[in-house]
Image (tube, rainbow, N blue to C red; front, side, top):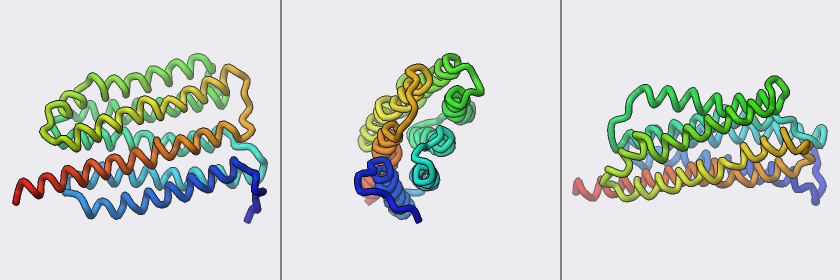
Amino acid sequence: MAVFETADLTAASYSTATLGLVATSVLLLLGTGWVNRGWKLPVALCALAALVGVGAMFEAREAWAASKMVPVVYHYVGWAVSMPLQVLALYFLARRCGKLGIGLFWRLTIVSILMVFVRYLGEAGFMHATLAFLIGLVFWLYVLGELFFGKMDEVIRNSASEPVRRGYFWLRLIVTVGWAIYPLGNFITSFAGYVDDGSLSVAYNIADFLNRMAFGVAVLASAMLDSEGSRNEQN
């Protein structure tokens, strides 16, 4: 077992994020029993995204302990799984409010995977950095376009459930503001010649409190409030 110095902020951020993701995963898995049947899948997808984050954080922390650096692959393996899961959680959340086509499901799945994979190819040197950055940015903007102007936004706006509309607002904000750190980090490492000495990892780990933990808790809160409202209407 590695023993870190008290002043090792990077190691502390990995440990804190790992424990936070473990707690979030347990809460969300328990939460699947507190919501109506239609909400179980979105909540479970967020729980899986948090669990993936636990594994990715643990591996990255071990890499930091061994070499005092974290290769980019340790960031991207987690994002490549957890971010598509979160996008699909939004899809199934919106699907509770109206009909969404299977085509949208596959577009969101493919685009959210490629959004991460292309950025990895650029940072790893397998693809021209500028081209990879621009393609990844386009894919992210496509996801935002679907969230703000597409069919998902339409069915949410027509929903009679206030908790769902309010929850979707905050979730969409997280994908817009919180996820901006990933293309920003990609830009800094690809074009500014920045070599991560641990500072960027700390920023990513802090962002995980919003992007994975708060995201999942927001889905659970919306699900519980909506489920409670449905039960009250039935009574």
